[in-house]
Length: 228
Image 1 (cartoon, rainbow, N blue to C red):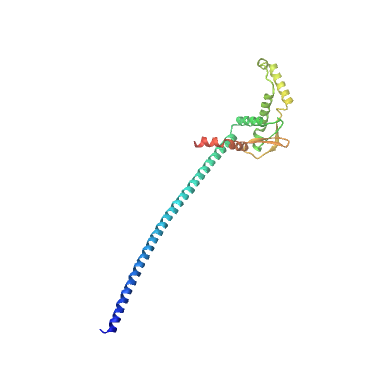
Image 2 (cartoon, rainbow, N blue to C red; image 1 turned 45 degrees about the horizontal axis):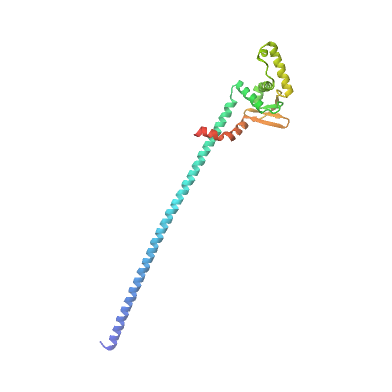
């Protein structure tokens, strides 16, 4: 081997060693980079998994909350429907009372609600025809009884006492402006009950109105009775 060949061989040897060193360094750097990316990928994968798990938990909590809220709404709606049914049943029962009890109820309702004793009694067409006159007569009797002074029992038991009682009762009723309710020829749409009218002033005593007012004040008590 001559001098040139030796130099060439040496250059090739040095270049090979240098290339080998560069390749090794490159492989080491590539391995390090791969390691970093693998670690980063694992970290990101773990973070993504944790994020997905957290999101899943949060969604489940939201769904559970929505389900609970919907359940409460359904229960509340069912309770309200039950209360409605209870008041509807009460109204139906009032409207289906035997005639004598119905007359007494309406008469007492009129007496309790009358302000002057001179009101017109307005009823449904059905009630006006069936019991209107009886209700007004009974209400006037109750008003007159409340306005008239008490008679001594021994006098009231005699025939003269009976006559005197009627005179005193009637006179007292006229003086105090009571026992003068009249049955109106006007009728109103209502399930039951009545309306008192004195000029432009009206007092609504229809069952549906009275029960609605009662519901506003008694709904909690009714609910407690139904559901406790």
